[in-house]
Image (cartoon, rainbow, N blue to C red; front, side, top):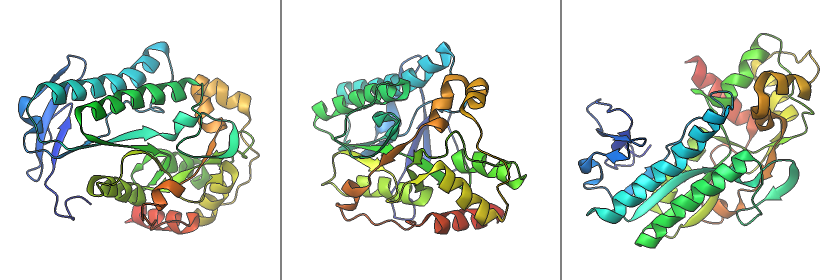
Length: 285
C-alpha cells in the first residue's frame, strides 16, 4: 500500500530480505545491535516488532519473550535515535486493544482505564517505552490493534478451519465481544498515521461494529455455507487445551473506533459479511 502511494521503503528485521524492491537491514534485539545504516534517509519508523501472542502456549519463558520482544526492541530504537544522527520525524507503533483487559461489554475508548491481566500489563509497558520517543521531539502515534481479519492467516484462518469441516462452534459463552478490523483498513490506518502529521497519541485500530464471538462464528459459517451443529466449546475444555492463553478467546472487549473516524478516516469494510466475503474470495484466488 505504501509503495503504491509512492513511498520509498526500507525493512528492518532479524534477517535481511533481498527482494530487490526494498532495502533490507538487520538488527539483533537480544544482542542490542542494529546496522548503522538502517536509519539513513528514513523519515518515519513503523514499529511492528513483537513475538506472536497466540503462537505458543504461555510458559513463563514465553511470557517473558512476549514482553521483552516489545519493550527491548523499543528501547533499542529509542537509544539508537537518541545517540545517532538521523532525520526521523515520526514513529508509528503497533499496540493492542489488550491494553483494556477483558470482561467488559462497555465501549472502551483511548482514555479508558487499563486492564490488570497479563496482556494488559504487557501492552502498558510496551506503550510506555514507545512514549519515551516523544521526549526526543519525534511525533509518536500508537495504534491499538484489534482482531485482524486477513486471508493470509491469523484469527480468521483459525476460526474458518473447524467450520469448514463441520465442527465449528462458538467459544465459551459466545457472548464475548470481538473488536475486529479488515487488514486493508488497518493498513490504511497506518498509512494515514504516517501521512497525517496532525495525528499523535493513541488510536484504536478496530472497525466501527464489534460483534460477539457467536455472531462472528455464525457469519463465517454463513459465508462458507456450513451449518453450526455443535454446542459452544465449554470454558474448562479451552483452559485445558490452551492454559492461561484461553483468556484471549474466552474473554473479549468492545472497543470504539470513534477517535480515528474523527480524523476523517473512513473504513472500506464496515460490514462483517462484506469483509468476510471479500477475504474468502481472496483466499480462493
